[in-house]
Length: 275
Ligand SMILES: O=P(O)(O)OC[C@@H](O)[C@@H](O)c1c[nH]c2ccccc12
Image (cartoon, rainbow, N blue to C red; front, top):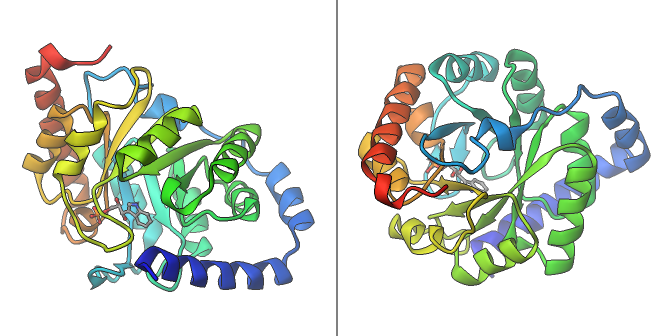
């Protein structure tokens, strides 16, 4: 059994409990009165390149590193991210391994005007309705956790609800599946969710397979501005950063620094810039 299988087992158990407490019908009603979704595709630059967007994550802990930060006030952290120039705020809602919750999502949603990503292991349509009911604008669809049929129908539901999906990949095969499903935002997670190993070179190895016009996100492993510059130089339109921001004493300044590093790298790689 891989780490991913193990996480998903817990996610399914927690989901069954929430569904018992609040049937889908009720969640759908809540979703219909949620504020209109904000366009995350546009916020991430629309796949045009030339600049770098930062997706800043509210992340309390992770299965690979344990506790990362004692985030007493997720709303204040998200507001700092917004001040620093983040394009999208990511909120982990998985509880067992990442210490997240839907209350974190609610708190962040109320605190910022930016698009908000509900970051979880989506394995059931219930979670997509739930994300919308809690005001999320984007959901995460991890290709490694989904059949092609689920990937396609989950993407369709996400779009029906006016949201966008970040379709997460880690291998060439997964990128091909994401492209075949017509994903408009594709993330390359350099962390293998089956083993939790990080390999930053995975990004450059896969980014060039993603068609122009798609928003390309480099996920995980950003330690500093040099890592951001590397990802941007290999074609990232956005970076998704958790640990480096939650551990920093000045997350807003760090985001600003990352954006500058990314912009410079894009300018320097002018030859290879996608249009
Ligand atoms: O803390 P990091 O290394 O900056 O990583 C952030 C983000 O990429 C990571 O949290 C992540 C990427 N894909 C995921 C899927 C589920 C849970 C978490 C993740």
